[in-house]
Length: 81
Image (tube, rainbow, N blue to C red; front, side, top):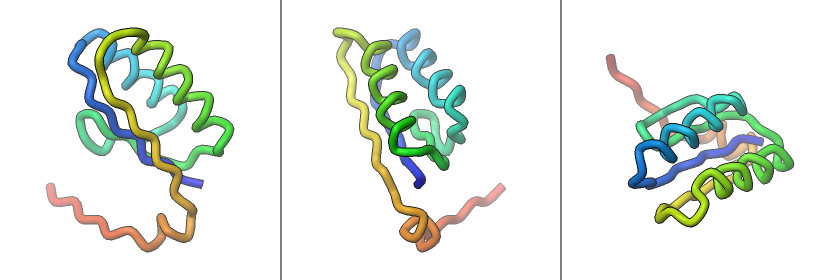
C-alpha cells in the first residue's frame, strides 16, 4: 500500500518536525509539504497520530491518502531536471 501525505502548517518548527517524522517512516519528499511512499495501513495510522501530536493545538491541515498498489501503478508522473 502506498500513501500520499500533504500538509499546510504555518509554524516552521512544527512543519520541520512533521517533515522529519515523514522521513523517519521512509516516505519520500515530492514537494515542500508533500510526501509519498510505500507504508502499511497500520504505520499510516501511527504516523498520522504522531503528526497530530506534533501539531498539537497549533493551526494546520494534514491529509493522508491511502493508495492501493494497483492505483499507484496507474499514476501519471513527470519530473524534469
